[in-house]
Structures are given as structure tokens and as C-alpha cells.
Amino acid sequence: MSFQLGEVDLDKDFGEVIRCLWEAHEEPFQPLYRLYCPTFDEDREASIKESTERFLEWHRHDPQSRWLKVTDTSTGKIVGGAWYKIYSENPFLHEEDEVAYWYPDDSTRDYVTQAIEQMDRPRKEKATNPQVFLNILCTHPDYRRKGIGAMLLEWGLEVAKDKNVEFWLNSTPVGKPLYERYGFEVVERNTLVPRTDHPDDNWKKIEKEMEDVVFWTMYMPRKERN
Image 1 (cartoon, rainbow, N blue to C red):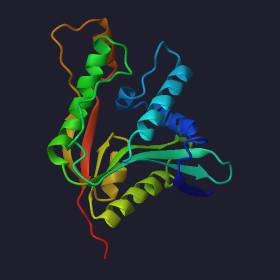
Image 2: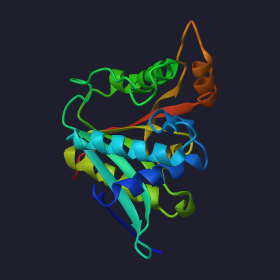
Image 3: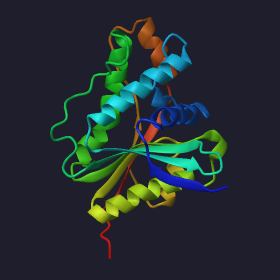
Image 4: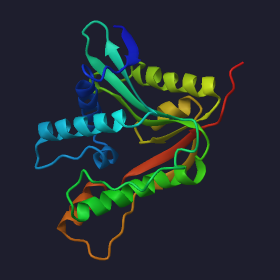
């Protein structure tokens, strides 16, 4: 079995990459990705379509954005993907506060907006230099432990080395061993704890879905190429 790393063809590949992202985070279930990939009205297919269109729109309007894929050369199936952002300056210099507009305009949106702010806080405080940021990395459940995550990660490490910049990421428990193996340092262990004085049923529902979420902000210092 052999695999090929390449950039995503937006017209041909993007939907398959986002479907791979969904399947990777559903097995085992990783609630952190639900912040950006919610399921609406228990309609999984419509929800995948919505997130595909939204991620594509974000990519087209962000010159820092790069999407990669890993393909099984024997079948043509996309079995892994990564979303990178490559910054030549402080990534938060011109960034406005993000509102989770893709959620309904109720307390659910408030919860997710707070959660994203809490997730971004360590980088806003400490990751203010030019950098490579790994936003998403996923491997299809049927193709784990075959080096696919390493292929996607090594691409970013090479870019960071070529540009002589830092490398930052947020890791779930599933991804943390891979990043530690490559020498990433834990900057901060984080939990999501949005607050409200008046939790309604919508708030309580998503709060339960997101309970016990933990992630690690991790960092690789600059490494100049010899």
C-alpha cells in the first residue's frame, strides 16, 4: 500500500477531504471539531455539505490558507488531510473577533463563540511571531498507523524550517502522541468553560456535548535550515 501527498484540488477533492475530516473525528468521537462541524436537525449529509461549502469559502478568502491531502494510490481514495495557515506576521494583528455565525442565533452560538475565544487565547497571548499554524489534521479511521499523519505533519515542518518560523498547533488527545514524538512542546493544557448566567435548554445541550473537552496548545521553535 502506497500513499501520495499533494495539495487539494478545490474543484475535485474538497468535498472528499471534508468528509474524511468528519469520519476521522467521529471515530473516536472528538467533540472539539463540533465547534466548526455541527450536525443540524440530525441530518449528517446536509451538515457535511454545509461545512464543506463554508470551509471552501474561508479558504478562498484567506491567502494564508493551504489544504493538503494524502491519497491511497491503489484506490484513489483520499485518506488524510490537513489545513495549514502560513503567516508572515503576527496572525492576530488584523484579525477581528470571530462569531460562530454558522450556528443558530441563540445561546448555542454564544456558547461556541466563547469556546473558540478560549481555544484561541493561548496563541493570541504567545504566538505573535510569523509562523506555520496547523489548524486541522485528520486520518481516515481505516488508515491509521500507516504514517499518514506524519506525512502531513512533515510537510508543515519543512515549510517552517524553510521560512525559519515557529510552528503552532492545538492538539486533541488523539493527536498529542504524534506531535510529542516530533518534539513539539506543550505550551498550555486547556479546557473549554463558556459561562452564562441564564443557561437555557440549548446551552445545556451543547454544554453536555462539549463536557470534558481538553486540548493542548503546542509549539515548535524556529529551526534554521543548515
